[in-house]
Image (tube, rainbow, N blue to C red; front, side, top):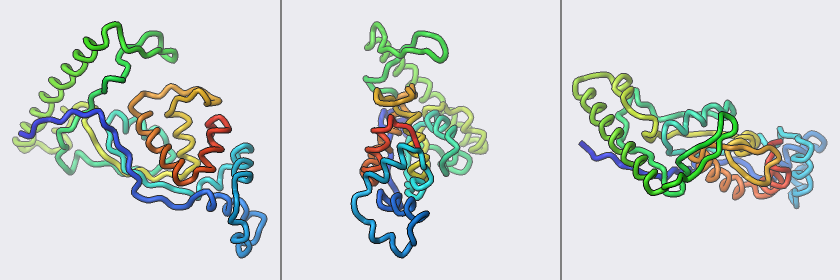
Length: 237
């Protein structure tokens, strides 16, 4: 049996992207300028994009798209797919044997919570080292046991789609996500926490890690759009 791997690393890779700030500006201008004349407006688009963001003319931002490869635990994907604004293709535990890679929180992850639903506060705990030891111990023991049973069921000829039922939600999966820039900004507004946000959000830390990585790619591909998004309080157009 392959020994389980425990990791705190969540990764996002850009597989492909289409368009940039210029494409957004072209899409906006086509409503008033003949397509043949659009090339004459290849200069600074900061003012136009700022106007689109401010007045929430969102459709031009849909002409920039990203395809991401995301490697994260299943519980993150369940939160991800609550956003019905992207196309998803996920690794299937019905058709392939899942690798024994399990997520564990790193030393910066807050482990305790106080308060009531809708008003939780997350804390490191009174004894962070002890809390972390308890969490890691429980996760490693339960994951090792679950994966051993998973392999045992497979060895008995049990179908993968049935055997996987013993596995915990912190087992890693992978998926392709294709999303346009407008929807991506909506996702970022809900899944990142920022003091600059017009509307506060309190995401689970693990999906926030994924969102932060996706945001760096938006900033790289469409820096003017990203700057306008931040300036307008991280509200999607």
